[in-house]
Length: 71
Image (cartoon, rainbow, N blue to C red; front, top):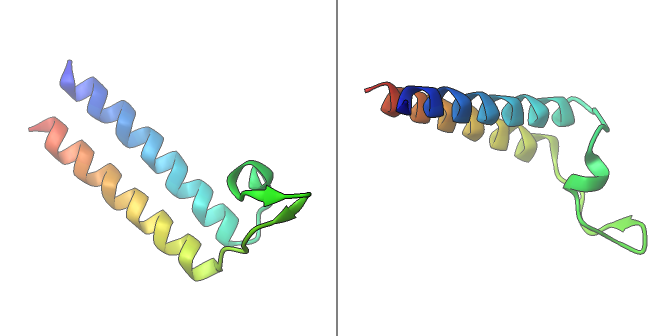
C-alpha cells in the first residue's frame, strides 16, 4: 500500500512542479491564489528564476518520495 501513496504523492508534486514551470513561462492561471495581495495589489512579484528553482525542487522531491516509497 505504501507504493500507492508514494505514486500519488509523487504525482501531486510533479503537477505542482509543472505549474511552477508554467508560471515561470508567463502563465497566469492561479496567480491570484498563489501570490498574496493587499487591496488587489500583489505583495511581491516572484522572479522567473526563483519560480523555476521551486519547480526543480518540487520535481526533486517527487523523485525522492517515489524512490524511497518504492523501496
